[in-house]
Length: 451
Image 1 (cartoon, rainbow, N blue to C red):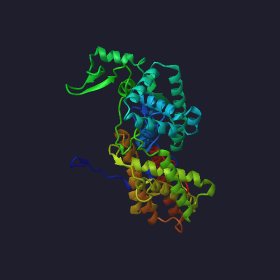
Image 2: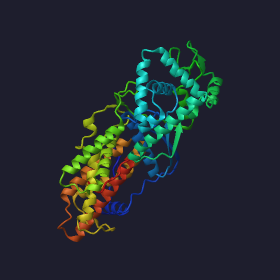
Image 3: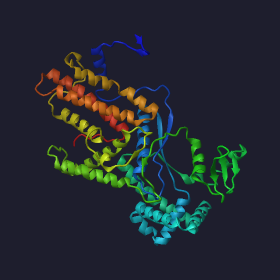
Image 4: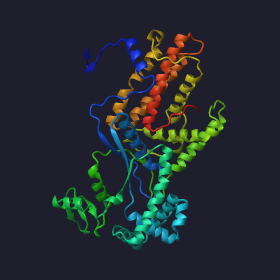
C-alpha cells in the first residue's frame, strides 16, 4: 500500500526472523553492488618533518573508514597517502637546523618532534626578519633544481619522518597500499599541466609577476611564484588529475603548526591508553590477564579517540577537548567494545549450545523483534554510509544496536532456561555480535573479546 509517499507492506514474521538469523550466523555477507569499481582513496596526507597531530586525525580515520566500506562491498581499493614533502617549509626546517646546530644523528633520536621544534623556531624568527624569509625561499629554489647538498638533506629528513609516521599508522591499524609525494609534481614534471593551462589562456601575469588564474575581475589564484617555483595549488592540480572526488570534512579547531599550537596525536593516544590501563587495573571485574593489559588498554584508548571523531557529522567543525575525547560514558568507543566483550563472554560461559537452525516460535518476545529489525538494517546502513561517504551514519547505528542488545540482554535470560529456548536466544545474540563486530571493523576498530 502506498500512502503519503510511503510504501507499506506486511512480512511473515517467523520466516523473516529465520532468514535473518540463519544467514548471518557465521559471517556477514555484504550487500551486492551491481557495478563494482576500482577505487582510489587518498587520505591522511601529512607534511613530512611535521608532527602527526590531532588536526590530522579526521582525514586519517574518515579516509580509512571509506576505504573499509568500499573493500567490504567488493570494490577494488587502493589506499594512497599523498605526503607533503615539498615547498618553502623545507627552507625553514633547513635554516632551523643550521641555527640550532642540529645534525642528522641528533634528528634520528626523535625525528618529528626535533624537526617540528626547529620549524617553529625558524618561523618565529622569520616573523621579524624578511631576509630569513627570502633565504628560506632560495633554499626551496635550490631544492627544485636538485642541488646536491640540499637535496641530500631533504631525502634524509623525508626518510626519518616516514619511519616515524608508520609507527602511528600501525598503531591505528592502517596500512597504505601506496605512498605518493608532493615532490612528484615539481616544476620539471608538471610543465605539461602548466602548458595546458597556458594554451587554454587560463594563466595571466599579475602585478607581482606571478602566474595566476583570475576567478573574476577582483580575485586571482597564484599557480606559479614570481621566481618560477611551484605552489601547493599547482602541485595539487597536477596530482588531482588522477582524483575524481574530494570528500570534504570539518576541522578540529585551534591548531597551528607554524605557531606551535598543536597537540600530538601520539600524546593523545598515550594518555588515552594510560587512562584505560588504570581503569582496568582498578575495576574488579576486569577479565584481561595482566600480560595483556597494555595491548588491551591501547586498543580501548584508540577506540575512544576514533569514535569520538566518527560520531560527528564529517562536515561539522569541533573544538578539541581532552575530557570529551577521553570520556568513557555515553555513546563512545568504550560502549561498543564493552557490548562486544559482553556478548563474547555470554557465548563462552552461558552453557547453551550454538545452533545454526532458527526456530522463531521460541523467540516471541518484543525485544527479539526490535533487535531483529536493527540487525536487518545493517545492509541499508552500510550502503547509506558508502553512498554518502559518511561514517557517522554507521557509528550512530551501532550505538542504537548496542542499546537494543542491552535491552534484550536484560529480558532474554539464557541461564536456567529450557535448553531449546536458551539455544535460540544464544543464536540471536551471536548474530547481534557478528553485526556489531563487522560494523566496528568498518569504522577501523579492533573488536576486543575481553576487557
